[in-house]
Figure 1 (tube, helix red, strand yellow):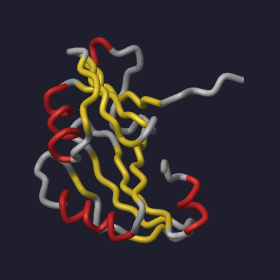
Figure 2 (cartoon, one colour; figure 1 turned 120 degrees about the horizontal axis):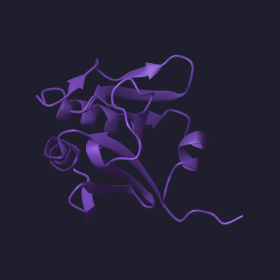
Figure 3 (tube, rainbow, N blue to C red; figure 1 turned 90 degrees about the vertical axis):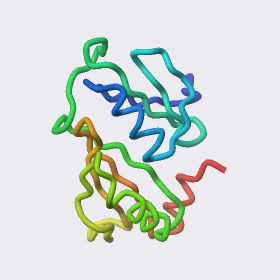
Length: 136
C-alpha cells in the first residue's frame, strides 16, 4: 500500500478573509499555499489545515457538520496558554476554560472558529499516548 506523505483537512468558508485572519493571526499558523480561493496552513510536519471559498468547494457544510479539528500540544500547560491567548478573542466563541475529559486521558479546550467549525486544543495526559502523536 502507498502511504500518504502529508494530510490536509479542508474547511469551507463564506468569508475567506475572516478565516485567513483567524488561522494566521489568532492561531499563528503558517500559510504555506495561497491559491486565492483556497489557502493551506501548516499545523505540524505533514499535517495541514486548508480553507476554501464555499462557492468553489466540492464539499459543503460548516458548523454542525460533524467536523472537529484537534490541535495536539505537548503539555497541559500549553492548553492553558492557548486558553489565555484565545479567551478574549472577539472573532470566536470559547466554550469554557480547559478541563480534563472524564472518559479519556485528555485535557482540552473547545471553541468555535469564525465560520462555525469546532476546534479543540488538547494535550494527552498519558505519556504513552502522547508519544504516539509526536512528530520529532
